[in-house]
Length: 286
Image 1 (tube, one colour):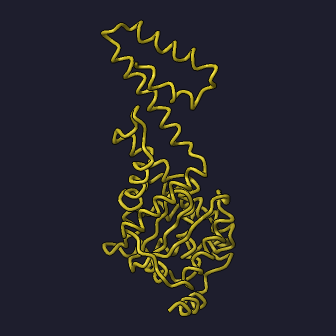
Image 2: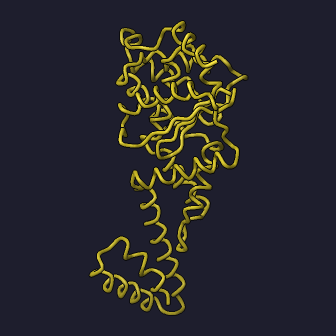
């Protein structure tokens, strides 16, 4: 029966007392269209089902997002796509910076996890649910702690703005994975793993992450100049652009937007600009 497959689905979103009326109305719709057009009625229902799935995926609770992030993280580690550094002092240092930023982020309620990846490439990325990954190569490339913190603030901003969740929704929709059969959690995890590396963020998402990240950096007590100088450093690399730019396309407009967001007097106001102190800190991890 056409209606039976939708009974459980609609019961998730509507009060039980409404179900007889809703299902009866949908059944009447099918009969009114006639048997010859019954398949069209079913297609309409499938589209409705898909639309509600899109809405449901767009409105994941924080708990659901964290659980998906945990599974994505587990897959990244099990598949060997991420090899974590075993340098515990370095891990503690990155976590200390990350938790400082997390407390002043737009979503301080998430249980953030900051991990150092044993990779010399200059890269960092984030997955949903508060998981941030920082390559050891990025730690070495930063001139000071403010530059390092600026990249981490940018990644936290992607999480705060739910960019990974939105990309997951868009890709699932474009690939036709949202059907009346349902979108399995395993499919969400697989897509999340793929998106962590392969698809660059949109220009709008990057600009939003820059803006939110800069605000977070300042609120956490770091000098905002660090975000600008690190981006300028990446831009100067030109053809030898680091891995970070494959998923975080850098444009001159992003740097100009950051420069317009702060005054020269504000740029150095805060902590983390001392390169000697930063190098002395890193020496402890070698």
